[in-house]
Length: 259
Image (cartoon, rainbow, N blue to C red; front, side):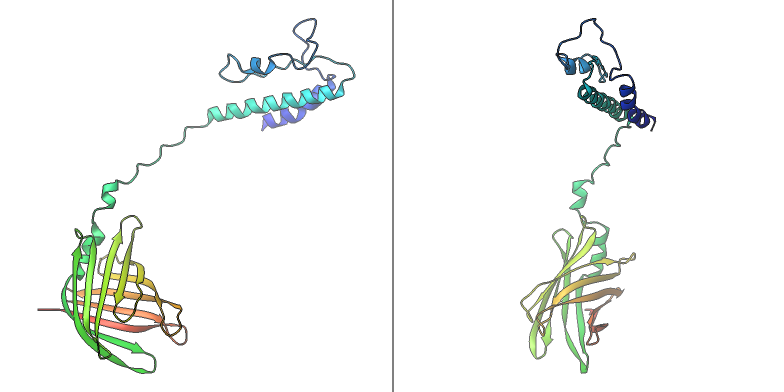
């Protein structure tokens, strides 16, 4: 901050001395101002700019003194900035990038998904406000595909008196560090996308999705929980806003491994 105080006082010092801080180095000054090559001489031959101020006295020339004072202040400020830059520590090296090959290989989370593979018999219960719960039965088959990178599952059965088929995919994206899912079935024409997490034990997945509501045409946010109950049982629950706007269970599935 001392440098700032000096720069503020510099114009006053110039004015007090009649606009001349230094007398010319030669007895006869150059007829014009600034002298030829003055800017080049300031920087040539030096690793850091040197302030060289040679103000020629000129009686009655107030404007010249003001201009020269401004130039002097600017030059001193430039030197101060350059000196500060030289003292700045070097920026730390950027951390090493993640190994690209590690990002494309299956890891711990993909091993968790293997707990969901196999052939199962399931019971599906639809829960609708004001309507008795309805049970449907069917088969579930799941396997890991593409080098154990994705869980591929298929549901078949009968629903509301019609053949039912649904297909789901679950993935763990090493780049985004989250689970992703898709679902399609023959009861609609859209694709439901989901994102979520798995607990520390690798046995419970919680996903959120936006589902198209055929009654309103709008989107409804849903939450689903898939849980490995034990080695032979898997449960699935889906929640969505009820008539009162509060989250309510809409569907549950209990799957038992086929013996």
